[in-house]
Length: 215
Ligand SMILES: N[C@@H](CCC(=O)N[C@@H](CS)C(=O)NCC(=O)O)C(=O)O
Image (cartoon, rainbow, N blue to C red; front, side, top):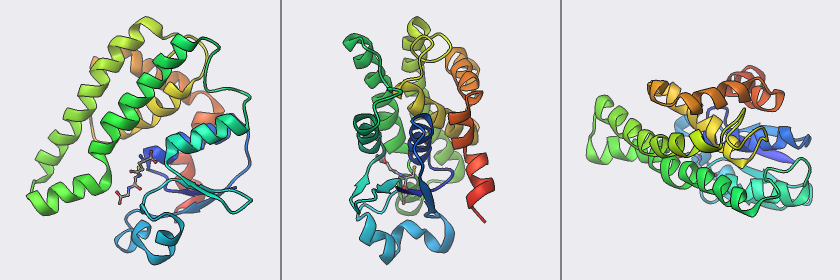
């Protein structure tokens, strides 16, 4: 399996954690989002993923799957153990709700091309860009912190690693990179620190991937 990957992409980071947790061997191909104006916009990558975003995976059969949540769904169905879910349908719905706050509500508003569009078309400066970024992260994290204060143990849902953690950890990494003060989110911060002590999360972290892949 090939993962088209960029070390700082939080959507890629979700998938790397998922692959590591399930112990799946894969080859990483870097699509550098900034180099040469963005390799995701190249003719070659457009042929692989016409949406011109990472991540996507190419299976050994040649099939290509894009969108991190669809990829994780595929991994869960094809490699069921260990599962990203519990045996309780109510908890599983809550896991998906946390994952969706991040993947559907926070991340799309703060994606690279959205921020670039705000700068080029609406001429916002760096301070306004930072305000925009932080506003949407806080909206999401305020809700997540409340929810997780009831369900969390070591991870978002007691002591099992779930899809919620796969989405949460990369979003926290990203928020820290944009200097969002995490003091209002003690539960989220605790889960982040616990997760990074796990090999699957640590090895998927941008720092580790950068050291291996990005020149
Ligand atoms: N919903 C997509 C989002 C993918 C996405 O936006 N990826 C970003 C990196 S995190 C990207 O490729 N951005 C390139 C661009 O905006 O030009 C997913 O979950 O895979």
